[in-house]
Image (tube, rainbow, N blue to C red):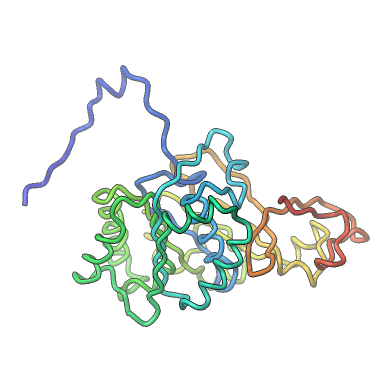
Length: 294
């Protein structure tokens, strides 16, 4: 098969004003591969589901527009492939998310978001059969989410060569299908025990984050952070911080705090540094130190 390659037109690049880059969500350029990294149980699947719903419906559930004033939300088809959660768990999560959508947004979600639970199927994107299937179901999607990457291959994730091949395949899929891939991944042991917001917090070979063009981390609120923000110890486990350690095509984005609500839904929270006497207490005891953005 002949390889078709387009050479860069330097004259056109120099003499014509470039088109603005297209971002699926702030920091994550369309047509690229990105990673969302966190320890297990932190809430990355719910965060990714809410991002998927936002792209599919236009309902900005996470206040993404506040991260970058120049970003414009472009809706489109989204494919969510999950090897982690069974259908009954996903049903509960979407029921919770659905409470925050109006009728037209729900209809857009039904039409634009395709979710398939693959627990127990041993999906392997590096095998011919699964490659063909994934290529068929993701064609033309604005966003493809893979939850989690470890569930979709049988390679040694500590082998740099293996992971380079895996990333290269996802990049090929982006180019061939005109899509963007966000894969979910777990932190390494050091990241799980430390702050977990560094690029190197990702588990396995560094190729996973070196070759990806975007990386975001989701971190639970630690005891020291709770002290800083005046959050009660009983309440701090409801808070998570979304950080952006690697942005190849975007200006830096500030960390964002979210609070976990009924059904696991994440809602933006604004925290203010306070004295110990004015801590944030559990839901029914909350003082003025924290407010949810509705």
